[in-house]
Image 1: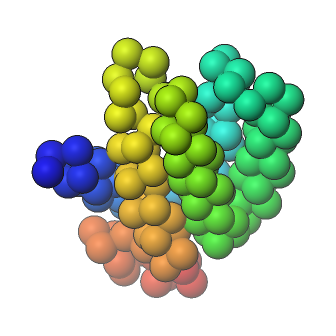
Image 2: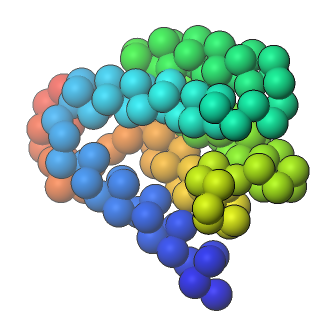
Length: 133
């Protein structure tokens, strides 16, 4: 049961922590992080040149994400799919933690949903409204 709940909680903690970062820094930081997530599996090389192609795709998505929460959300969903492929192949994100890709595949959509709502902060509502977010 914990293997299902903990990744969702981690995603919610991510959202909670990053909600304290004011806009537009919140969006920019999240774009950079999702771009970095695209390279998370590159050292494993389980999919050969596909790993490089995926990293390139995620870099492009992250670049557009610098100005678009929607693209950041798309990036997290792309990473979710990559997590599933790696989990099914038996090549986890953290080699010593068998279910790490599985957990990441549950955590990433939580972050993506938040991004699709515009990365809004429940803590800084007035400031976000003032910025037109």
